Image (cartoon, rainbow, N blue to C red; front, side):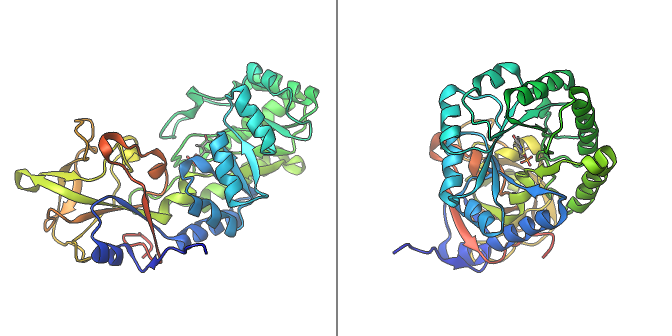
Length: 383
Ligand SMILES: *Cc1c(COP(=O)(O)O)cnc(C)c1O
């Protein structure tokens, strides 16, 4: 019989019972369902999930349970993960550079929508069934994203016009897509793209049924929940204004914002030096904290003693190193920890569901692989 893993009340209860000596992610399916519902209620179109943010089987199966029917995949391994979660999930293969073997895998998996951003990539898709959608990915130089995705993928608007015509002439269902970047705090990024999509369609003289507005929705980084509804409304208003009655079906593919709040990462303090100025954790930038290196320190961390109680006291900024013997394995300076913090305590990082376990390595024999399921996550702005 299939084993059902235990459900813990909270990270604190699990830490106090088992005092793990390795880093752990605590997953609350309830929080994931709430966020999925928020997207499905507020976004004016089809909500899909970008698997790369966190491909854990429990994430995918809970999203299916929450009513998510389509997934953005980038590789055959992600297709397998989605298929394992749902036999009839719809797949959008939105990694625009593919080997021939990957294209065959996508055809075998029944991928419904493919994105392209270059004529050389469209030429490779000759065997893709004509019943499929091919979405031309375009990119604008956009301020406001934490990374500039446009520097890697995306046709210029002029190239997109030619590609859109070529897709229509090839007999596939033409569509457009873009991805404004990640942790995009300003909705004007989507608005600019939506108006650019309108111009591309007009210049190509090709009608499209669907416009994929990508992911990039911001997660809670500093204790202030991002106003997703404001972004959804701005997208809806821009699409109405740009397209009127000819509005294509909108699609979004959040990764980070969908999954981040449903996980808290717990890392244990292995050592402290210089009167607590310097702290060594059992996880770091080669493990589940890699995204912190790029995104900056989170504004909300808690410290929990081995008996599960919260450490108190004034906070002061510490230098925090990870467990590997590599001097780069260091968080951006100044993580504020309470005065009472001691060796053997756990540092809890809320909002670490995205780009954490997915990017963790086994470097030096460390890394993040353990997930425990909890009812409540502590340290959330909402609780
Ligand atoms: C990574 C990615 C996403 C998800 O981005 P988030 O910032 O995690 O929301 C969506 N679409 C595409 C094409 C991506 O590459």
